[in-house]
Length: 469
Image (tube, rainbow, N blue to C red):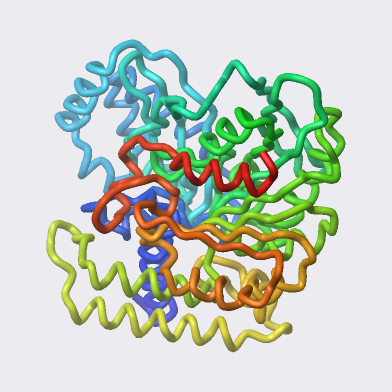
């Protein structure tokens, strides 16, 4: 590959490897280079050319042909490489496996994300005995270049602290230009009640802040609503408008802050809410940006920061990559990655981080770095969340799970030291909890995100007490 393409290739590989530690989506043994194409982890962060093909329609046709076991027509849609890897015999074996999942209950709408010139389309499918997500990579020629079936949404079970008879839930929509769907949980009885807005982690998160099969925001919503708190959770703009966002040099304001401020105004307008008792709970990136959101909003009664980095985002990503490379858990094409390759990737990552730190305001239109627009990095340049939080005149609660493999303890320690002299701040860590605040034992890994669990009851209790419930 030419020098520029080689650098971009390594940048994508490094980004995916770093971001799996943020999202927990990638599973052990799955080639991160393939993941870059399939999972679309960098899709919403890069500016791409637009294609005349309709990737959603092509992917849906390919899915229908797969379900109907019509190989000749499927092969007509496939790229030469896919046809070489997915011959008629392999196609039939996959069809037999699918048949074992029972009758089709529902096929969802295609969600299109962009990965350079490739469009990655995800279609959820519910069978009688299994839920899956069918992912198709559509190339510039409109061919299906990659097909991958992955586990779908697991059925969420209520935690013991959820008391569904004590509150109601309803679907809501807020915003003007960027209308976002959400879920509002309202306690039964006479209000007005205190309220909480839940702001998600990094990336195109859903309203439940899902990490694999874990749904920490669904847990928190049920737990807090059962304690007499109105709770609003919503789909992130990056998820709801993935294709539209990929065409603009967005910032943290666009990704998270603007919508959070709009959501807070919507929450205060609800008749069941005491507008003077509205709180923000931010997880991961949502916690990192919580002081900025609070400063812009100017009316919050308090802020809860959960599992958030305190250092710059690029430094955290570099740490995540180093941890990943040290673990050497991810084989490529069935062979162990050579140490020389790992060292080279780390050196390239360090150079990329140095490039981020050297950005100036006139670089806002520069090419994306680590999958995020230059404008995004510039927006966060010089941001110190603990220092900004210390300027706020409202109570702040910082929570951390000591088994968190995505955000190191050094960040929690920096939150503690940065807020040490503040009168309104409280910090607490939990030895047995991971990044999603689910209990476990031993070192936490992304595998935990595939095992059902719930936010620990002591976390719900601490947040409820902080709110006064």
